[in-house]
Amino acid sequence: MTYSDIFKDHLASPRNAGEIPDADASAERINPVCGDRLRLTLLISDGRIERARFLAYGCPPTLACGSALAEMIEGMTIEAARCVSRQQIADALDGLPARKQHAAALAVETVRAALDAERDSDFVMVK
Amino acid sequence: MRRVYLDNSATTPVDRRVVEAMIPYLTEKFGNASSVHFFGQEARAAVDRARREVALLINARPNEIVLLSGGTEANNLAIRGIVENVADHGRHIITSLIEHSAVRGVCDALEKRGWEITRLPVYDDGVVRLDDVRAALRPDTVLITVMLANNEIGTIQPIAEMGALVREERARGRRHLWLHTDAVQAAGRMPVDVEVLGCDLLSLSAHKLYAPKGVGALFVRRSVRLTPQNIGGHQERERRGGTEAVPSVVAFGAAAALAREELSQRIDHMQRLRDHLETGVAARVPDIVFNGHRTQRLPHLSNISFRFIEGEGLLINLDMQGVAVSTGSACSSGSLEPSPIIRALGRDDEMARGSIRFSLGKDTTDEDIDYVLEVLPRAVENLRRLSPLYQHALADRACVVADEKDVLAPAI
Picture (cartoon, rainbow over the protein chains, first blue to last red):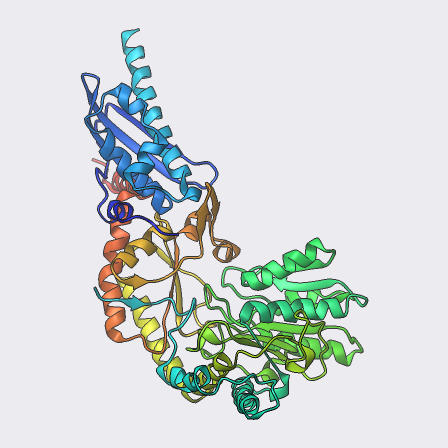
């Protein structure tokens, strides 16, 4: 199993690691098969992600995908963040081994879950 | 960058003295050991000398040594060779839950072909119990195959006691029961004597002994008959066809001689450094568990589970700082394979995933261990800071402390 230099750099120096205490949106998703876990907290202002922080447990691709995701979505609009694809995350890491694609899928699922939660909470407030 | 190799259970560097011994057989002494002319006889003599050295390492006779390609082939020949030969007498095999895949895989394959397999538990110390072996014996049991020492946690199994049990059974008239042990990890790291062990078959691999990869041996006790698995040549007394890998065999012989001569000093050296490593890790890193029996184990190996993090992440972090270790867990295609060995100890998935094997060698130095003790705590801490499991645990602990304060606060 070989990983790219950028992948290893994400592992050695994770981007945006941590947790935002008063986050506007958050989600923690678990891959039910392998137990890998990704937690994402977001600060959102005017429809744009101002800050994104991640925590991750699992194999190295899960950590690297969490890091790549959190770095990528900072500054994005909610709509753009919702459209981030597995391929974009894999590309940001110079590719993922075929057997580790599930890590990118977990990242995509987690950001969408966080944004869904944020949308639903807005809905509750309006009501 | 400093490089520290603590993965000697995966393979060892070839000893310079071993390289020197094999070089003539890669160059001017190139004969085929089966040839009648001078070149062939020169190679034959070298193979015979090496065979004697391998036999001496385990207190066997030279004609009880079958030279072959390594541990996996030795295990295949031992298990399949025996059970196929005596299939008419019984089809039951006893093994353990913590065998190397070269034994586990062969047993699994035989199970699909109609053999019955009993896989013995190892309890939380990673050691098979003799009573369990005795209880598993059936009239149709033909083979007990249990490793001498485990490759991931280093625990030493009671093979000599199993050997005595097999001899007792023979004394009672049972003729078709054999004992095989995979000694690939044990040889060169503890005394291995086939008479003390009382085994009928024993597997060895050269590259765990500071010789090159691609060569090994199977000890086959004199009276034991095997169905050969490599057919097409008369080599190794019809037990393993194929031209002898003369340079590698010579290297194996040289390495076996060195292992025998230097065994006690190697053991003392590795155990002292391993204990230094374990004491240092325990003092510097909280939330760890040492896996396997604390004393009944190989001197060069330490297996540690680091809570809240996953082994492969730690492995890569250490690798980026020049430290080579290994982990028994693998995660692929979204399906987790936590180390079956650590799971067999009764540990949960998190502990099995967070296990790392440090395996020292005869050339590991104090400075190597000091360097690992410098970089390891930081690598663990960095991964834990990223881990939601760790953050949850910290929050839980804060709650417990707060609760305790409430309880202890004097009523006003």
